Length: 290
Image (cartoon, rainbow, N blue to C red; front, side):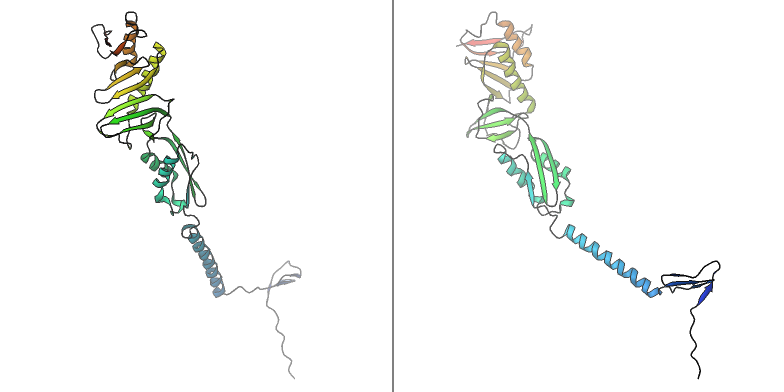
């Protein structure tokens, strides 16, 4: 009978090699077995599966970041909230309602700061930060509170506390340690705008301090007249000193200091002293006794 021929593995001749068994490749003296390469279909299939896997991961990650709700703003936290600034804090929360539910990755802290400062000019500084995954933190710094403002209008009398740039911070509230500034007007003060311009408020406060320092007499309150641009300082002896806000308070009060040799304001029973009028020498004053 015929013997079945044994199939011999295909070898290619390679010089200088000793027979070594290495994995699926067999090396013999002068011959090496040829390893079959994967077919082109399997290579393409492997690439397609890898691409599909990474695409699925990308889609899941994209959905998790932007649509799952995990990174949507759920809370606006004011760090330095106190009893004194409780009303202001509530207004800031209301101002930022448009950010609630927005993806926090798209929230620009600088734009948030600009938004708040434009709505609340009474704030000196604001800092906004994103706290992942879903919190926006706000820290603000107010201008110093400096004076009580009493508004006497034809409709109502109201008391306020203003800050150093003239904005109303507290309504229906007084602080006896602050100077009192009385403003008489036909209509009530608009609480959304400056009660007193910054420069004029500084003028009033500085003139009070200057007078008390130079004359040793306390100022009880100040009447500010915006239209004629006058400031009337009411002293503890119940007479008023009229100042023109368009001119330096130091120069006007120096005139009174020079006249104190003849006019003793600590003893005279006066109704007012008018320092607004400048004479030929610039030292003219007008006063009225009771």
